[in-house]
Image: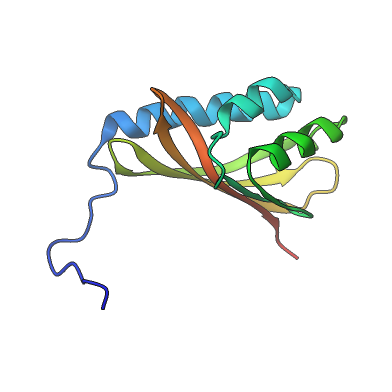
Length: 134
């Protein structure tokens, strides 16, 4: 049986330093994505074997698959406008970033969610998901 926390709900803003760090990391990721800076994008993802990126058209498991996808995608991600970003802390060393965006080529609305962990004194994406509304 899974234990149930019967105490107060988790305060998702209890670690303001985590939220500040994730804001910076998310900004770095978005800039690297806009510039198709594959080296920076690879560096922002965890190198752990259980890292996952579920994209709009692909499912990638492990750092090698993610890096190969980035190298093969020579034109980079389509330009986009961020409509909303929410960041929550899950403790001093973990948090989630969600972004709602508009694809500037076709106007489609997309969603991006990332779970970040502090790994080797740097913030890294451990799980990412990108999808579009129908």
